[in-house]
Image 1 (cartoon, rainbow, N blue to C red):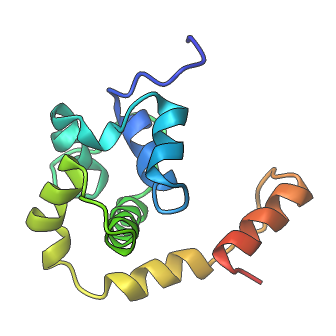
Image 2 (cartoon, rainbow, N blue to C red; image 1 turned 30 degrees about the horizontal axis):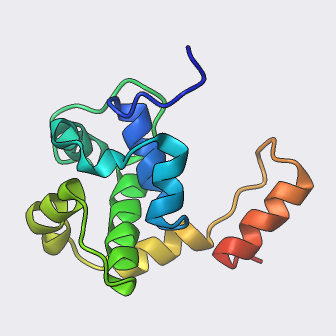
Image 3 (cartoon, rainbow, N blue to C red; image 1 turned 60 degrees about the horizontal axis):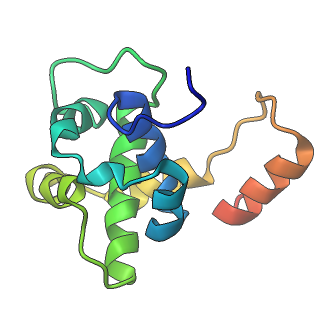
Length: 135
């Protein structure tokens, strides 16, 4: 409880993965203190997050599908920016993502959905909707 990121747990990995498609790698590293996707010890946890292991982390993390889509969008972002993939994404791309079907459509489904049950202030909701083009 130090109000900081440990960069070595499922919650940190999930948060980093969710933000990666939307924040530049340098900005995200500045927020976390390092690139969590370079922590080789977290690969088994990443497999759990995307539903390719027998268990799911107990911490507050999203669904397997959300994690899988975030990884896919992260790979696309790195490719678009002509940047080398971090170790965990490169390994996941080879082991898992390359074998998945319709990831672009699955990503669109998640990004285009929007629930009304939340506690976001209206200003933040509007910013998020603009960022992911939800109307």
